[in-house]
Image (cartoon, rainbow, N blue to C red; front, top):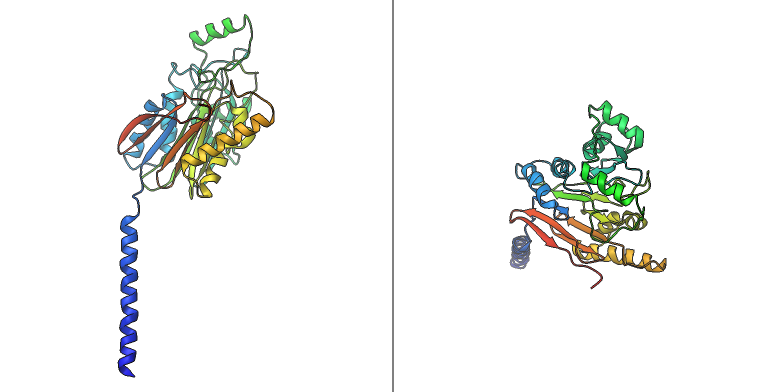
Length: 326
């Protein structure tokens, strides 16, 4: 009897040993997390990524990285769809929208903000210094001034000349992949494995005064879930709002889709909604970029021509997005 017990005991220990070997084998085979990494929309994302990488490469927080990254684009007058130098609305006013979201689901947003060069930093102040998540128009401007920001003329000479030329016909016709509706959206995963995102724009050129697109709306232009991933959008904001696009991408990742597949499915949803409304896709462009907790990323858009920048340990590069319409 004792011999039988000893045999069973040894057999049990052997089974545990096999289990440990199996666990070690599985652990060794597990893919390494790609971190830190930052993604941003369009070719101007390359320079923005460089600013964000300075933070990430020093083991900084993703929130600080995305704010610093998009601030670079906001301050660049040659980028005509973001911040200083952005094209005005049909009344000749440059109105800016922005939002920011961190790994703890803290959010801040401003919309229709005038005369302040860095709406993303005002959005962060809304997040950190008020009980609210969104301020708009005159209220947003007053808050910005209370925080020490000074008013500046954001309408540069080139944009003013173009606006006056547009007034001769006043034809409102956004064109696919022309920078009259682009946005810089940035999402990042830091060395600690935390995600954050930022989105900022001057919106559609020659829009109606007071028009707000998807960029300052959490869930539309940007969404972050630190358990799953992050996504941001660019293009025609009305279509992104209609599907709560960035939130949709993150929820699709939650269901098991890769970032690439999630972006594809979200674009297809927009296409379906557009077709159901019997609207042509000819002049509608929307692009998504997405990043999950493992540092895997993807992108998809309606028309070809959209690209995004990726910066990780392999370097900073511009990537051409796959698209729905061939």
